Every structure is written in C-alpha cells, then in structure tokens.
Image (tube, rainbow, N blue to C red; front, side, top):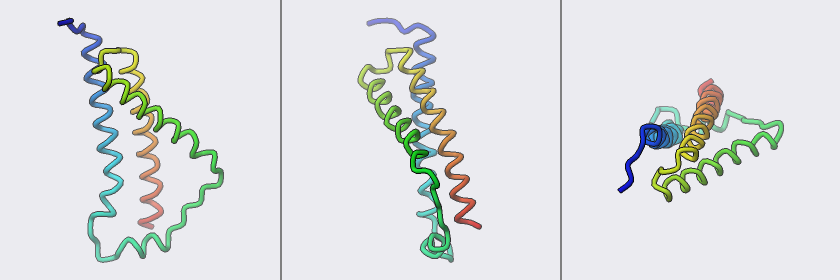
Length: 113
C-alpha cells in the first residue's frame, strides 16, 4: 500500500469538504419551497419577475457546473489520489459556491420584496 504524503492528504480532505459544502448550499435553495408559510409560493412567484437581459450570462455558470461534475467524477474515479485535480475541484467548488450565494441572495430579495 502506498503512503499518502501530507499535501496529498490535505488536498483530498479539502476536495471532499468543498464538494460537501457545495451540495449543501445547492440544496439550501430548495428549503423555502418546502417550508410552509401562510402565503403560498404561487402568489409570491406570480408577482416576481426575473429578467435575464443577456442569455450569454448563463453560459459560464453552465460551463462551471459541467466542469465541477467532470472533476468530481475524475476525483472519485481516481480515489482523490491526484493532488492537482483535487485542488482544481476545490477551486471550481469555491467559485460555484460564491456564484450560488450571490444568485440565492438576488432571487430571495426579489421573492421576499
């Protein structure tokens, strides 16, 4: 059995943690739809209008998400043994987490206004 060095172990832990945090934040967006209020979400959504001025702004988040899936599958397949791929997954996850937080704050501001 091959011994893991310190940097490989750190990158493995960081990659697993980043993926878990991303999945938790991704599913946190569903919580308001599940949580019950006296005012239904149909009424809130009916009055909220999200307009995307430029459709090309959706391309880069889609590329990031596809890259995240590809890196996650690659890391899982190789059992997190490639340090460089682990750090790429961490970087991709951090960028996606930042994007999701900004997106959720923008959407909730519109829905709760």
